[in-house]
Length: 510
Image 1: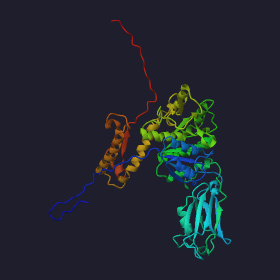
Image 2: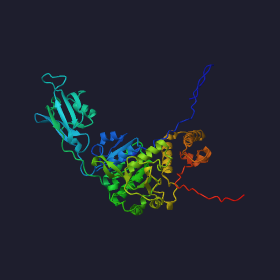
Image 3: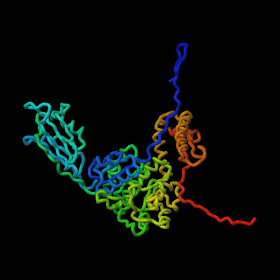
Image 4: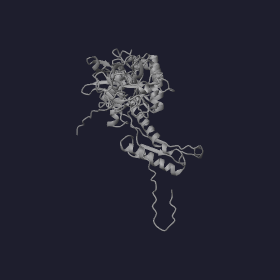
Protein backbone atom coordinates (compact mmCIF):
# COMPACT_ATOMS: atom_id res chain seq x y z
CA UNK A 1 0.00 0.00 0.00
CA UNK A 2 1.40 3.45 -0.89
CA UNK A 3 2.63 5.50 2.05
CA UNK A 4 0.70 8.65 2.98
CA UNK A 5 3.25 11.19 4.22
CA UNK A 6 2.06 13.20 7.22
CA UNK A 7 5.28 14.72 8.60
CA UNK A 8 8.50 16.02 7.07
CA UNK A 9 11.08 13.25 6.89
CA UNK A 10 12.20 10.12 5.06
CA UNK A 11 9.73 7.35 4.32
CA UNK A 12 10.62 3.78 3.29
CA UNK A 13 8.36 1.87 0.91
CA UNK A 14 9.07 -1.65 -0.32
CA UNK A 15 8.14 -2.12 -3.97
CA UNK A 16 7.37 -5.67 -5.23
CA UNK A 17 9.71 -6.83 -7.97
CA UNK A 18 7.01 -8.76 -9.79
CA UNK A 19 9.21 -11.85 -9.85
CA UNK A 20 7.36 -15.07 -9.03
CA UNK A 21 9.75 -17.92 -9.68
CA UNK A 22 8.30 -20.84 -11.62
CA UNK A 23 9.85 -24.10 -10.47
CA UNK A 24 9.89 -27.08 -12.78
CA UNK A 25 7.98 -30.11 -11.54
CA UNK A 26 9.45 -33.59 -11.17
CA UNK A 27 9.45 -35.50 -14.45
CA UNK A 28 9.77 -39.16 -13.48
CA UNK A 29 7.39 -39.97 -10.63
CA UNK A 30 6.17 -43.49 -11.37
CA UNK A 31 2.67 -44.85 -10.77
CA UNK A 32 2.12 -48.61 -10.54
CA UNK A 33 -1.10 -50.57 -10.31
CA UNK A 34 -1.07 -54.25 -9.39
CA UNK A 35 -1.64 -57.27 -7.16
CA UNK A 36 0.40 -57.46 -3.94
CA UNK A 37 0.56 -59.45 -0.71
CA UNK A 38 -0.36 -56.61 1.62
CA UNK A 39 -1.07 -52.91 1.80
CA UNK A 40 -4.23 -50.82 1.50
CA UNK A 41 -6.50 -51.66 -1.45
CA UNK A 42 -7.53 -48.91 -3.89
CA UNK A 43 -5.33 -46.35 -2.17
CA UNK A 44 -2.19 -44.73 -3.57
CA UNK A 45 0.89 -45.03 -1.32
CA UNK A 46 4.13 -43.20 -2.05
CA UNK A 47 7.42 -45.10 -1.85
CA UNK A 48 11.00 -43.99 -2.42
CA UNK A 49 12.88 -47.27 -2.80
CA UNK A 50 12.28 -51.00 -3.04
CA UNK A 51 12.71 -51.36 0.72
CA UNK A 52 9.67 -49.11 1.19
CA UNK A 53 7.76 -51.35 -1.20
CA UNK A 54 8.73 -54.48 0.72
CA UNK A 55 7.58 -52.96 4.00
CA UNK A 56 4.33 -51.54 2.68
CA UNK A 57 3.29 -54.16 0.10
CA UNK A 58 5.24 -57.32 0.90
CA UNK A 59 7.90 -57.27 -1.82
CA UNK A 60 8.14 -59.66 -4.76
CA UNK A 61 5.36 -62.15 -5.37
CA UNK A 62 5.42 -64.88 -8.03
CA UNK A 63 1.97 -64.02 -9.41
CA UNK A 64 2.46 -60.25 -9.22
CA UNK A 65 3.74 -58.74 -12.46
CA UNK A 66 3.73 -55.29 -10.87
CA UNK A 67 6.05 -56.30 -8.03
CA UNK A 68 8.80 -57.20 -10.52
CA UNK A 69 8.13 -54.00 -12.47
CA UNK A 70 8.59 -51.92 -9.31
CA UNK A 71 11.85 -53.73 -8.53
CA UNK A 72 13.08 -52.96 -12.06
CA UNK A 73 11.94 -49.33 -11.77
CA UNK A 74 14.17 -48.63 -8.78
CA UNK A 75 17.02 -50.77 -10.12
CA UNK A 76 17.11 -48.72 -13.32
CA UNK A 77 17.12 -45.32 -11.65
CA UNK A 78 13.63 -44.57 -10.37
CA UNK A 79 13.47 -42.27 -7.36
CA UNK A 80 9.86 -42.22 -6.21
CA UNK A 81 6.60 -43.89 -7.14
CA UNK A 82 2.96 -44.18 -6.19
CA UNK A 83 1.64 -47.72 -5.78
CA UNK A 84 -1.99 -48.81 -5.85
CA UNK A 85 -2.95 -52.33 -4.75
CA UNK A 86 -5.93 -53.94 -6.47
CA UNK A 87 -7.41 -57.42 -6.18
CA UNK A 88 -10.34 -59.46 -7.44
CA UNK A 89 -12.57 -61.80 -5.48
CA UNK A 90 -13.17 -61.01 -1.81
CA UNK A 91 -9.92 -60.03 -0.09
CA UNK A 92 -10.26 -60.05 3.68
CA UNK A 93 -8.17 -58.95 6.64
CA UNK A 94 -7.16 -61.46 9.31
CA UNK A 95 -8.99 -60.91 12.59
CA UNK A 96 -9.17 -62.02 16.22
CA UNK A 97 -11.24 -61.13 19.27
CA UNK A 98 -9.79 -60.46 22.71
CA UNK A 99 -12.16 -61.43 25.51
CA UNK A 100 -12.40 -61.92 29.23
CA UNK A 101 -14.86 -64.09 31.10
CA UNK A 102 -16.82 -64.79 27.92
CA UNK A 103 -17.23 -61.06 27.14
CA UNK A 104 -15.74 -59.67 23.91
CA UNK A 105 -13.48 -56.73 24.77
CA UNK A 106 -11.58 -55.82 21.58
CA UNK A 107 -11.74 -56.87 17.93
CA UNK A 108 -8.30 -56.88 16.31
CA UNK A 109 -7.99 -56.69 12.51
CA UNK A 110 -4.84 -56.82 10.41
CA UNK A 111 -3.94 -53.42 8.99
CA UNK A 112 -4.73 -54.59 5.46
CA UNK A 113 -6.30 -57.50 3.65
CA UNK A 114 -4.30 -60.62 2.93
CA UNK A 115 -3.04 -63.95 4.20
CA UNK A 116 -0.01 -62.13 5.64
CA UNK A 117 -2.17 -61.20 8.64
CA UNK A 118 -2.44 -64.85 9.69
CA UNK A 119 1.22 -64.55 10.82
CA UNK A 120 0.29 -61.82 13.32
CA UNK A 121 -0.47 -62.55 16.96
CA UNK A 122 -1.61 -60.35 19.85
CA UNK A 123 -0.41 -60.97 23.41
CA UNK A 124 -1.96 -59.40 26.51
CA UNK A 125 -0.20 -59.23 29.90
CA UNK A 126 -0.73 -57.43 33.21
CA UNK A 127 2.88 -56.45 33.94
CA UNK A 128 1.87 -52.79 34.13
CA UNK A 129 2.78 -49.74 36.18
CA UNK A 130 -0.22 -50.39 38.45
CA UNK A 131 -0.30 -54.01 39.63
CA UNK A 132 -2.58 -53.40 42.62
CA UNK A 133 -5.74 -55.51 43.00
CA UNK A 134 -8.55 -54.11 40.88
CA UNK A 135 -6.17 -52.46 38.40
CA UNK A 136 -7.63 -52.12 34.91
CA UNK A 137 -4.31 -51.55 33.10
CA UNK A 138 -2.94 -54.03 30.57
CA UNK A 139 -0.16 -54.30 27.98
CA UNK A 140 -0.57 -55.38 24.36
CA UNK A 141 2.22 -56.81 22.19
CA UNK A 142 1.58 -57.21 18.46
CA UNK A 143 4.04 -59.45 16.63
CA UNK A 144 4.39 -60.60 13.03
CA UNK A 145 6.30 -63.86 12.63
CA UNK A 146 10.00 -63.09 12.38
CA UNK A 147 9.57 -59.43 13.26
CA UNK A 148 10.04 -57.20 16.28
CA UNK A 149 6.96 -56.74 18.48
CA UNK A 150 4.95 -53.55 18.74
CA UNK A 151 4.40 -52.97 22.47
CA UNK A 152 1.71 -50.74 23.97
CA UNK A 153 1.88 -50.40 27.75
CA UNK A 154 -0.47 -49.38 30.55
CA UNK A 155 -3.61 -49.31 28.43
CA UNK A 156 -7.18 -49.07 29.73
CA UNK A 157 -10.62 -49.45 28.18
CA UNK A 158 -11.93 -46.09 29.43
CA UNK A 159 -12.56 -43.80 26.39
CA UNK A 160 -11.98 -40.74 28.57
CA UNK A 161 -8.43 -41.79 29.44
CA UNK A 162 -5.37 -40.73 27.37
CA UNK A 163 -4.31 -44.39 27.61
CA UNK A 164 -7.50 -45.61 25.89
CA UNK A 165 -6.49 -48.84 24.14
CA UNK A 166 -8.36 -48.25 20.89
CA UNK A 167 -6.87 -44.79 20.32
CA UNK A 168 -3.33 -45.70 21.36
CA UNK A 169 -3.05 -48.92 19.31
CA UNK A 170 -4.68 -47.49 16.19
CA UNK A 171 -2.36 -44.48 16.26
CA UNK A 172 0.82 -46.47 16.79
CA UNK A 173 0.51 -49.85 15.08
CA UNK A 174 1.55 -50.66 11.53
CA UNK A 175 0.27 -54.22 11.84
CA UNK A 176 -3.24 -54.03 13.28
CA UNK A 177 -6.24 -51.83 13.93
CA UNK A 178 -8.62 -52.42 16.82
CA UNK A 179 -12.25 -51.59 17.46
CA UNK A 180 -14.96 -52.34 19.97
CA UNK A 181 -17.20 -55.35 19.39
CA UNK A 182 -20.57 -54.73 17.80
CA UNK A 183 -22.58 -54.16 19.89
CA UNK A 184 -20.17 -53.26 22.73
CA UNK A 185 -20.82 -54.48 26.25
CA UNK A 186 -21.91 -51.56 28.52
CA UNK A 187 -19.31 -52.58 31.12
CA UNK A 188 -16.29 -52.50 28.79
CA UNK A 189 -14.72 -49.47 30.46
CA UNK A 190 -14.40 -51.50 33.68
CA UNK A 191 -12.89 -54.57 31.98
CA UNK A 192 -9.63 -55.61 30.43
CA UNK A 193 -8.87 -58.54 28.09
CA UNK A 194 -7.59 -61.73 29.63
CA UNK A 195 -3.87 -62.53 29.63
CA UNK A 196 -3.33 -64.66 26.54
CA UNK A 197 -1.65 -64.82 23.15
CA UNK A 198 -4.19 -64.81 20.33
CA UNK A 199 -3.28 -65.41 16.66
CA UNK A 200 -5.15 -63.60 13.90
CA UNK A 201 -6.83 -65.76 11.27
CA UNK A 202 -9.09 -65.64 8.23
CA UNK A 203 -6.99 -63.49 5.91
CA UNK A 204 -7.61 -63.71 2.15
CA UNK A 205 -5.50 -62.21 -0.66
CA UNK A 206 -8.37 -62.20 -3.12
CA UNK A 207 -7.74 -63.19 -6.71
CA UNK A 208 -5.66 -61.74 -9.52
CA UNK A 209 -7.30 -58.51 -10.69
CA UNK A 210 -9.12 -58.48 -13.98
CA UNK A 211 -9.96 -55.53 -16.18
CA UNK A 212 -12.80 -54.41 -13.89
CA UNK A 213 -10.54 -54.22 -10.83
CA UNK A 214 -7.76 -52.47 -12.75
CA UNK A 215 -10.17 -49.94 -14.20
CA UNK A 216 -12.00 -49.34 -10.93
CA UNK A 217 -14.66 -46.70 -10.38
CA UNK A 218 -13.84 -43.07 -11.11
CA UNK A 219 -16.48 -41.72 -8.72
CA UNK A 220 -15.23 -43.91 -5.86
CA UNK A 221 -11.58 -43.37 -6.87
CA UNK A 222 -10.89 -47.08 -7.07
CA UNK A 223 -8.47 -48.95 -9.33
CA UNK A 224 -6.43 -46.64 -11.51
CA UNK A 225 -8.60 -43.73 -10.42
CA UNK A 226 -7.08 -43.90 -6.93
CA UNK A 227 -4.30 -41.90 -8.61
CA UNK A 228 -6.67 -38.93 -8.83
CA UNK A 229 -5.82 -38.26 -5.18
CA UNK A 230 -2.11 -38.05 -6.03
CA UNK A 231 -0.56 -34.61 -6.40
CA UNK A 232 1.75 -35.59 -9.27
CA UNK A 233 2.75 -38.64 -11.27
CA UNK A 234 4.42 -38.69 -14.67
CA UNK A 235 4.79 -42.30 -15.82
CA UNK A 236 1.94 -44.80 -15.52
CA UNK A 237 2.63 -48.55 -15.58
CA UNK A 238 -0.02 -51.29 -15.38
CA UNK A 239 1.99 -54.51 -15.89
CA UNK A 240 -1.06 -56.74 -15.34
CA UNK A 241 -2.29 -55.87 -18.85
CA UNK A 242 0.45 -58.24 -20.00
CA UNK A 243 -1.50 -61.27 -18.75
CA UNK A 244 -5.00 -60.15 -19.84
CA UNK A 245 -6.78 -61.08 -23.02
CA UNK A 246 -6.66 -58.71 -25.97
CA UNK A 247 -10.05 -57.11 -25.39
CA UNK A 248 -9.54 -56.62 -21.65
CA UNK A 249 -6.03 -55.25 -22.11
CA UNK A 250 -7.25 -52.79 -24.74
CA UNK A 251 -10.07 -51.63 -22.45
CA UNK A 252 -7.66 -50.97 -19.58
CA UNK A 253 -5.15 -49.25 -21.86
CA UNK A 254 -7.83 -46.99 -23.33
CA UNK A 255 -8.84 -45.72 -19.90
CA UNK A 256 -5.21 -45.46 -18.81
CA UNK A 257 -4.40 -43.24 -21.80
CA UNK A 258 -7.39 -41.02 -21.02
CA UNK A 259 -6.23 -40.73 -17.40
CA UNK A 260 -2.72 -39.82 -18.52
CA UNK A 261 -4.03 -37.17 -20.89
CA UNK A 262 -6.07 -35.65 -18.06
CA UNK A 263 -3.16 -35.75 -15.59
CA UNK A 264 -0.45 -34.74 -18.10
CA UNK A 265 1.34 -38.06 -17.62
CA UNK A 266 2.88 -40.67 -19.93
CA UNK A 267 1.77 -44.30 -20.23
CA UNK A 268 4.09 -47.22 -21.03
CA UNK A 269 1.86 -49.94 -22.44
CA UNK A 270 2.45 -53.63 -21.71
CA UNK A 271 0.99 -55.90 -24.38
CA UNK A 272 -0.89 -59.12 -23.55
CA UNK A 273 1.24 -62.08 -22.48
CA UNK A 274 0.05 -64.72 -25.00
CA UNK A 275 2.33 -63.12 -27.60
CA UNK A 276 5.10 -65.48 -28.62
CA UNK A 277 8.05 -63.25 -29.51
CA UNK A 278 10.35 -66.24 -30.00
CA UNK A 279 8.85 -66.71 -33.45
CA UNK A 280 9.05 -63.23 -34.96
CA UNK A 281 7.83 -59.69 -34.22
CA UNK A 282 4.92 -59.89 -36.66
CA UNK A 283 2.59 -60.87 -33.82
CA UNK A 284 3.02 -57.55 -32.03
CA UNK A 285 2.44 -55.76 -35.33
CA UNK A 286 -0.83 -57.66 -35.73
CA UNK A 287 -1.85 -56.81 -32.15
CA UNK A 288 -1.15 -53.12 -32.64
CA UNK A 289 -3.00 -53.04 -35.96
CA UNK A 290 -6.02 -54.61 -34.25
CA UNK A 291 -5.82 -51.99 -31.50
CA UNK A 292 -4.89 -48.95 -33.55
CA UNK A 293 -7.23 -46.80 -31.45
CA UNK A 294 -4.60 -46.97 -28.70
CA UNK A 295 -2.19 -44.86 -30.71
CA UNK A 296 -1.72 -41.69 -28.68
CA UNK A 297 0.93 -39.06 -28.12
CA UNK A 298 1.01 -39.83 -24.37
CA UNK A 299 1.84 -43.53 -24.73
CA UNK A 300 4.70 -45.75 -25.86
CA UNK A 301 5.16 -49.45 -26.60
CA UNK A 302 8.35 -51.53 -26.30
CA UNK A 303 9.30 -54.93 -27.76
CA UNK A 304 10.44 -57.55 -26.81
CA UNK A 305 10.03 -58.29 -23.10
CA UNK A 306 13.11 -58.33 -20.83
CA UNK A 307 14.12 -61.45 -18.96
CA UNK A 308 15.49 -61.05 -15.43
CA UNK A 309 16.83 -63.48 -12.80
CA UNK A 310 13.94 -64.36 -10.47
CA UNK A 311 15.03 -64.59 -6.80
CA UNK A 312 11.78 -66.43 -6.01
CA UNK A 313 12.63 -69.20 -8.48
CA UNK A 314 16.32 -69.94 -7.82
CA UNK A 315 17.26 -67.03 -10.09
CA UNK A 316 15.95 -68.70 -13.23
CA UNK A 317 15.09 -66.22 -15.95
CA UNK A 318 11.58 -64.76 -15.93
CA UNK A 319 9.95 -62.60 -18.58
CA UNK A 320 8.70 -59.32 -17.11
CA UNK A 321 6.68 -56.40 -18.37
CA UNK A 322 8.93 -53.78 -20.02
CA UNK A 323 7.15 -50.83 -18.38
CA UNK A 324 8.94 -50.92 -15.03
CA UNK A 325 12.39 -51.20 -16.58
CA UNK A 326 11.71 -48.40 -19.04
CA UNK A 327 10.11 -46.15 -16.43
CA UNK A 328 13.30 -46.46 -14.39
CA UNK A 329 15.35 -45.71 -17.50
CA UNK A 330 13.25 -42.57 -18.10
CA UNK A 331 14.00 -41.45 -14.55
CA UNK A 332 17.73 -42.11 -14.91
CA UNK A 333 17.92 -40.27 -18.23
CA UNK A 334 15.98 -37.31 -16.84
CA UNK A 335 18.34 -37.06 -13.86
CA UNK A 336 21.52 -37.40 -15.90
CA UNK A 337 20.64 -35.50 -19.09
CA UNK A 338 17.20 -33.93 -18.80
CA UNK A 339 13.67 -34.81 -19.88
CA UNK A 340 14.49 -33.53 -23.38
CA UNK A 341 17.01 -36.36 -23.91
CA UNK A 342 15.61 -39.48 -25.57
CA UNK A 343 15.65 -42.49 -23.19
CA UNK A 344 17.44 -44.55 -25.82
CA UNK A 345 20.87 -45.19 -27.26
CA UNK A 346 24.04 -46.80 -26.04
CA UNK A 347 23.71 -45.00 -22.68
CA UNK A 348 20.23 -46.47 -22.16
CA UNK A 349 21.40 -49.75 -20.63
CA UNK A 350 18.65 -51.95 -19.18
CA UNK A 351 19.94 -52.76 -15.71
CA UNK A 352 19.12 -56.12 -14.22
CA UNK A 353 18.10 -57.54 -17.60
CA UNK A 354 19.93 -60.79 -18.36
CA UNK A 355 18.63 -61.08 -21.91
CA UNK A 356 15.65 -60.25 -24.12
CA UNK A 357 12.95 -62.72 -25.16
CA UNK A 358 13.73 -62.14 -28.80
CA UNK A 359 16.87 -60.85 -30.46
CA UNK A 360 15.87 -58.39 -33.15
CA UNK A 361 17.96 -57.99 -36.27
CA UNK A 362 18.52 -54.67 -37.99
CA UNK A 363 16.03 -55.65 -40.67
CA UNK A 364 13.35 -56.54 -38.11
CA UNK A 365 14.08 -53.33 -36.21
CA UNK A 366 13.50 -51.54 -39.47
CA UNK A 367 10.03 -53.07 -39.65
CA UNK A 368 8.78 -52.24 -36.15
CA UNK A 369 10.36 -48.79 -35.79
CA UNK A 370 8.32 -47.07 -38.55
CA UNK A 371 5.20 -48.47 -36.85
CA UNK A 372 5.96 -46.66 -33.59
CA UNK A 373 7.09 -49.81 -31.75
CA UNK A 374 10.28 -49.15 -29.81
CA UNK A 375 12.88 -51.90 -30.01
CA UNK A 376 14.89 -53.29 -27.14
CA UNK A 377 18.15 -54.55 -28.60
CA UNK A 378 21.21 -56.54 -27.60
CA UNK A 379 24.54 -55.19 -28.89
CA UNK A 380 28.07 -56.44 -28.25
CA UNK A 381 29.90 -54.47 -25.53
CA UNK A 382 26.87 -52.32 -24.70
CA UNK A 383 24.57 -55.21 -23.72
CA UNK A 384 20.79 -54.84 -23.56
CA UNK A 385 19.65 -51.32 -24.38
CA UNK A 386 16.64 -49.30 -25.44
CA UNK A 387 16.88 -48.58 -29.17
CA UNK A 388 13.72 -46.60 -29.88
CA UNK A 389 12.18 -43.31 -28.77
CA UNK A 390 8.80 -43.00 -30.48
CA UNK A 391 5.37 -42.49 -29.02
CA UNK A 392 2.47 -44.63 -30.22
CA UNK A 393 1.63 -41.68 -32.45
CA UNK A 394 5.10 -41.97 -33.94
CA UNK A 395 4.30 -44.22 -36.89
CA UNK A 396 5.70 -42.69 -40.06
CA UNK A 397 2.29 -42.68 -41.78
CA UNK A 398 0.77 -40.48 -39.05
CA UNK A 399 3.38 -37.72 -39.51
CA UNK A 400 2.64 -36.47 -36.02
CA UNK A 401 4.41 -33.52 -34.41
CA UNK A 402 4.50 -35.68 -31.26
CA UNK A 403 6.45 -38.45 -32.93
CA UNK A 404 9.20 -38.63 -30.31
CA UNK A 405 8.98 -39.44 -26.61
CA UNK A 406 11.36 -36.69 -25.37
CA UNK A 407 9.45 -33.99 -27.24
CA UNK A 408 6.13 -35.09 -25.80
CA UNK A 409 7.47 -35.50 -22.27
CA UNK A 410 9.17 -32.09 -22.45
CA UNK A 411 5.87 -30.52 -23.49
CA UNK A 412 4.07 -32.25 -20.60
CA UNK A 413 6.77 -31.00 -18.21
CA UNK A 414 6.40 -27.41 -19.43
CA UNK A 415 2.59 -27.59 -19.32
CA UNK A 416 2.50 -28.90 -15.75
CA UNK A 417 5.16 -26.47 -14.53
CA UNK A 418 3.40 -23.45 -16.04
CA UNK A 419 0.01 -24.68 -14.82
CA UNK A 420 1.30 -24.73 -11.25
CA UNK A 421 3.53 -21.68 -11.58
CA UNK A 422 0.83 -19.30 -12.86
CA UNK A 423 -1.87 -19.93 -10.26
CA UNK A 424 -1.13 -16.52 -8.76
CA UNK A 425 -2.47 -14.89 -11.94
CA UNK A 426 -6.08 -15.82 -11.13
CA UNK A 427 -8.15 -12.77 -10.09
CA UNK A 428 -5.32 -10.28 -10.78
CA UNK A 429 -6.26 -7.11 -12.76
CA UNK A 430 -6.15 -8.15 -16.40
CA UNK A 431 -4.08 -5.45 -18.05
CA UNK A 432 -0.56 -4.63 -19.18
CA UNK A 433 1.08 -4.67 -15.70
CA UNK A 434 -0.13 -8.26 -15.24
CA UNK A 435 0.92 -9.24 -18.74
CA UNK A 436 4.39 -7.83 -18.17
CA UNK A 437 4.78 -9.90 -14.99
CA UNK A 438 3.61 -13.00 -16.84
CA UNK A 439 6.10 -12.42 -19.66
CA UNK A 440 8.87 -11.89 -17.10
CA UNK A 441 8.19 -15.01 -15.05
CA UNK A 442 7.33 -17.42 -17.87
CA UNK A 443 10.20 -16.05 -19.94
CA UNK A 444 12.64 -16.60 -17.09
CA UNK A 445 11.48 -20.20 -16.75
CA UNK A 446 11.83 -20.85 -20.48
CA UNK A 447 15.23 -19.13 -20.62
CA UNK A 448 16.48 -21.37 -17.82
CA UNK A 449 15.47 -24.42 -19.87
CA UNK A 450 17.21 -22.94 -22.92
CA UNK A 451 20.43 -22.48 -20.95
CA UNK A 452 20.24 -26.13 -19.88
CA UNK A 453 20.08 -27.18 -23.53
CA UNK A 454 16.40 -28.13 -23.75
CA UNK A 455 15.66 -26.32 -27.03
CA UNK A 456 17.03 -25.86 -30.52
CA UNK A 457 18.51 -22.53 -31.50
CA UNK A 458 21.61 -20.46 -30.87
CA UNK A 459 19.75 -17.73 -29.01
CA UNK A 460 16.62 -17.43 -26.87
CA UNK A 461 14.84 -15.71 -29.77
CA UNK A 462 15.38 -18.80 -31.93
CA UNK A 463 14.57 -21.26 -29.15
CA UNK A 464 11.29 -20.05 -27.63
CA UNK A 465 8.82 -17.20 -27.32
CA UNK A 466 6.37 -15.98 -24.68
CA UNK A 467 3.54 -13.70 -25.74
CA UNK A 468 1.02 -12.05 -23.48
CA UNK A 469 -0.13 -8.64 -24.68
CA UNK A 470 -2.96 -6.83 -26.44
CA UNK A 471 -2.51 -9.06 -29.48
CA UNK A 472 -3.12 -12.28 -27.54
CA UNK A 473 -5.71 -10.67 -25.25
CA UNK A 474 -8.35 -8.82 -27.26
CA UNK A 475 -10.94 -6.77 -25.38
CA UNK A 476 -13.57 -9.48 -25.86
CA UNK A 477 -11.46 -11.95 -23.87
CA UNK A 478 -10.65 -9.35 -21.22
CA UNK A 479 -14.37 -8.70 -20.78
CA UNK A 480 -14.89 -12.42 -20.22
CA UNK A 481 -12.14 -12.53 -17.59
CA UNK A 482 -9.69 -14.47 -19.78
CA UNK A 483 -5.95 -13.91 -20.02
CA UNK A 484 -4.21 -15.73 -22.88
CA UNK A 485 -0.54 -16.72 -22.62
CA UNK A 486 1.08 -18.07 -25.77
CA UNK A 487 4.27 -20.08 -25.27
CA UNK A 488 6.21 -21.75 -28.09
CA UNK A 489 9.45 -23.70 -28.14
CA UNK A 490 11.73 -25.34 -30.70
CA UNK A 491 12.23 -28.94 -29.48
CA UNK A 492 15.37 -30.96 -29.83
CA UNK A 493 14.55 -33.94 -32.02
CA UNK A 494 16.67 -37.06 -31.48
CA UNK A 495 19.17 -38.06 -34.14
CA UNK A 496 17.30 -41.24 -35.01
CA UNK A 497 19.12 -41.89 -38.29
CA UNK A 498 22.80 -41.11 -38.71
CA UNK A 499 23.93 -41.09 -42.32
CA UNK A 500 27.64 -41.01 -43.09
CA UNK A 501 28.57 -40.34 -46.71
CA UNK A 502 31.94 -41.59 -47.88
CA UNK A 503 33.48 -40.73 -51.20
CA UNK A 504 36.75 -41.67 -52.82
CA UNK A 505 38.89 -38.82 -53.95
CA UNK A 506 40.34 -39.35 -57.39
CA UNK A 507 44.01 -38.42 -57.42
CA UNK A 508 45.00 -36.36 -60.41
CA UNK A 509 48.53 -36.11 -61.73
CA UNK A 510 50.24 -32.78 -61.39
